[in-house]
Length: 495
Image 1: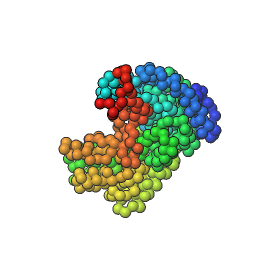
Image 2: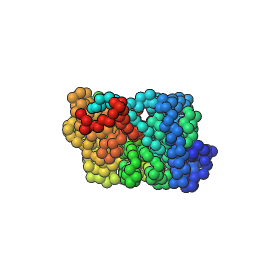
Image 3: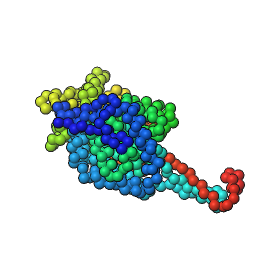
Image 4: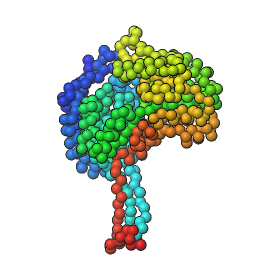
């Protein structure tokens, strides 16, 4: 029995969508329909934007500490409903229950952090060049914010965007991924229960081509915040640029973990397994490349294959499962197509996996084996293109300098990792790796909300999520001059 979910537009839950309906299927057991959703398009987005625009003049005047208290209350409600939300997420997108609990926890952490910003939102006070004159800057809200979010973190990523935007005084139109709308509905219910005004948060489920494009193109949407592929991100940037609207993009990655000869190999092995196969490799920060120095390469590869072969794949709600399914059939087919590409590329060797899991209970879902290629060269497609699945490419290097060259030799620059006991080498890595995130003796996954999240090159357009840096997406700077001299003073002229 599936649930019937609704959009939330202009203060009302609505059952209908002009684009028909969407079905939400459990990727671990396709016999289970998690829910049916109305699919919205330009008409629903228009209504949602009009409501958010109408609410904005009132919401922006609510004192920021009071807005923040509402987000703090939302965090408390997330704590109360953590297990319920985690189980729903596992059912609708497949990752194992310990990971979906972590997904909710990141939303909780974001609530605490964003609520604290309600009593900061710092500006600057500065001396002015003329007497009896005072200068300062302040953050001002921007307006209606369109949030377009992915399916792999159905709670964490929407909260990264929505919580700080509301604390800053903006209103929101939220379009979740069509694979994970159920978690989005629950998040909106929590925000309403916490006290967010009904028109300040609007939910429109639908496809990217219909609802997503309508958000990007709507002239009354001041900010578009998008997390997804670089290909789609480029199109959003171009469309947003036509309207001169602010666009924040968090896009793809081809992240690598370096392991040097002097590393703690057991620690590095645990990091590689978690980074490559956590969330079935379906993270923008997933470890897709493993760069091994000559001296430890063979020993490390043998241990890696042995451990990866033993990973327990299955329904994420089952005890002891370490890796769930791909999100849907199309994504599994994409993963398989990259395996075929890897097999056909010169000198790459398929050392483990490479196949769909289709026997027994696996036939019920979109499962794929943990997969490892060795003898991979840096320029190969499997070492250059984002796969978004449980496929790891191993590259052999001679020394640190070659490792960094290989690390940097992609169009992306999101996350990176190096395992070494040499503090000098670690600091050189921090300096020389081209990425928005660098881990020393840790895997490429595991961001914390108090630090900026985002990358360089094709990974984004310079904006950052999380930390106080996210405030630059959802606020405008205003410079304020107060002249209390009682006479006209002409800056740059009167000295």
